[in-house]
Length: 117
Image: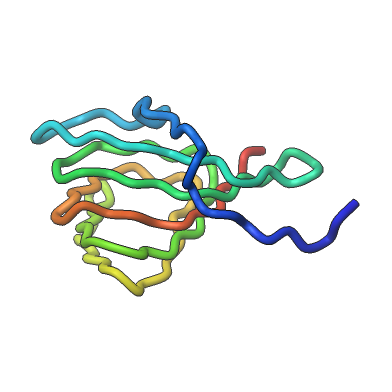
């Protein structure tokens, strides 16, 4: 088993263009693409790239996610909480119990690492 895996790019890989489970469009006509680049050997973690166009979603998370935003700007507002704006170059985490709005203000591209189990 390899203990280090270098992630390749998205060129030549067909993205999944379905909206993520638990994400419901609330404004505009945003569309997303997800490239799964690596799944851990125990099947617990998924790493990849995600893109989304301008618009908004209400998101319900069931698992922890680490994000590094490569391009764009998002305002994320937890239900009943204060908005947080993130932009290209920011790294952040979303806890497994997050529920709230992701307002995509500029087209975004991010690296993510998502706990599956």
